[in-house]
Structures are given as structure tokens and as C-alpha cells.
Length: 66
Image 1 (tube, one colour):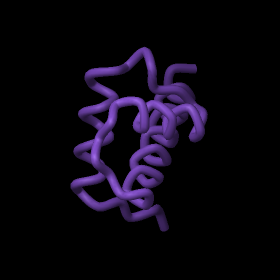
Image 2 (image 1 turned 90 degrees about the vertical axis):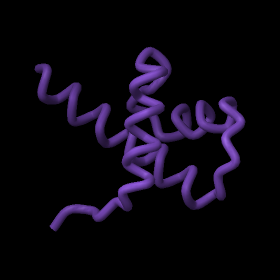
Image 3 (image 1 turned 30 degrees about the vertical axis):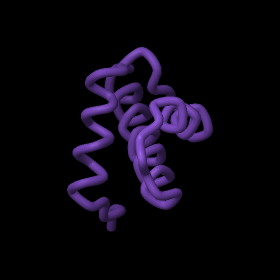
Image 4 (image 1 turned 90 degrees about the horizontal axis):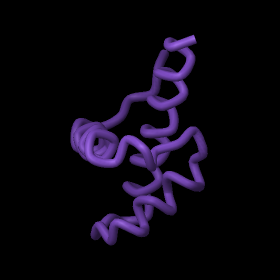
């Protein structure tokens, strides 16, 4: 079974990836730092979920491209 990610988390992550494609990486910590630098009013748990989701999606896209 896969990980269930709430719709709101997915939507925010996809929007951030859309507007900042060059800043999203395969590193969770760098993605978390990106979210902090954007100054979004997110709780810690949501920030971590979004950073993790972006990391997984980036790795999946990278793997599919190879």
C-alpha cells in the first residue's frame, strides 16, 4: 500500500513545484528549507508532509526520465 497524502498537502506541493521547479530537489532537508524561506504560515507537520511529498515526486520523475 502506498502512503495516503491529504488533498490539501498534494495541492500545495504541486503548486510550489509548478512555481519553483528549479529549487525543488531530491533532498528532504533542502525542500524543507525552501518552504521555510517562502515564509508560508504552515504548521511543522504540514511543512514536513509537503517537503516529503515533493521529494518523493521529484525522485519518481527523475527515475521515470532515466
